[in-house]
Image: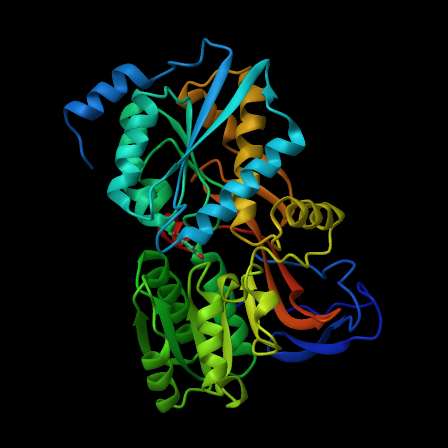
Length: 434
Ligand code: PHB
């Protein structure tokens, strides 16, 4: 269990409430949260397949095909429709915003983005990745949600195409291809920390509600590991279908079990419907503490959540309320370009393009997958979410995880960060390496 360190002095605007934290189990004053504005600076603490003819053809035709030319094509295979459509829109909006801000010329070559809709269906993703390599001659790929990223991994490997994973939050995805590099997140990075927080905050009996697909299973697994290690008990794990979820039956069952804490993972696009059903049943006033990964307080849905999520604490890597100037600029530019509040999915696309641009600058425009991935390994930069880097060992993202509480500021709910865990790696890969 991490130690929550006392923060002295005032890192943030005055007038806020005192929060608690622990240091070796003792309660301590942690910080003050502003009642009328964003934190000026968050307090910080250190914490420590398909093989066969077609793919062979891909390997022969795909590798380096556009490297010698003046255009570098990047194919994004994204869920623009279907169960996870919100994530596709947000990622593409983030990627396009990056290009609008940084131009479309890198290392003397013109960058061309090609977007293909896999409709949230893994088989489509595989086919589209093949077509992008063989027909469109893309030099790089962007992969989206977990099932699709898993499905197209052998294509990226056989075709030798460097691929940036921009949405998937499942640990194992980056191991499916040596050419996969992730700019999104893992669920374990967040759900372990929120379990530790819940234990610290007095939780003893939890029920988990999880969207029934791989990132949900992973969020639940890491939550349970840490929660149990801290002396808590998970009374039950309830699954909700990914497509057209009805949260009524699981909320009923969860309430009946009378836990002190409800841990929830729903993917981007479903926080809104979940919150509505949670509120309609009066569960926000039942005394059951709601906790989750950042997905639960998705900034795309928060503005319309009323006061149902007020005071809910989550562990996440991005909040539109993150207090850096870079993030304020990002949120303003994203709002202007799209009409939406920037969210945690959008930064995967924005940072994904940054990683590609900077890697191409390093390789002088060379797009050979081994060369590009070598350039990406160990790269670190300032993102709207804070400092991030690519772990050279795992090709996975290393990023801050913030503990945040929902507050109303200037009439709208925001997830306000009040503890920072710096440089968090994927806990499942770290455990496996031990
Ligand atoms: C995933 O595909 O792994 C995924 C999608 C949406 C989320 C989280 C994870 O909010």
